[in-house]
Image (tube, rainbow, N blue to C red; front, side, top):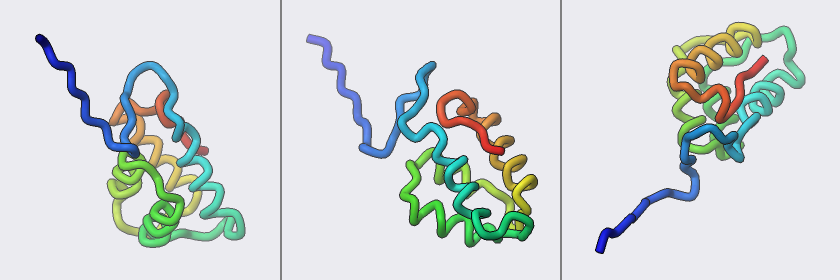
Length: 98
């Protein structure tokens, strides 16, 4: 008898052609970070802290953790996040940011 065990943690996502439940979460994160600081810079530490507070799934936390150290104006942060998302092939699954 063939056994088909799949192990999936509650915070992991099966990648495929479907959008994840977490689709748009990075856009929400960016919007929250710059809600009261549209023209200012946000540090990577601030981004990580907010992502942890929002309890992002493991894949999205990986995206945030892959950001280079430094401070980010909104446009640069979006470019960096989109680059990481695209490199992983997750644009359709999680969405890109602006």
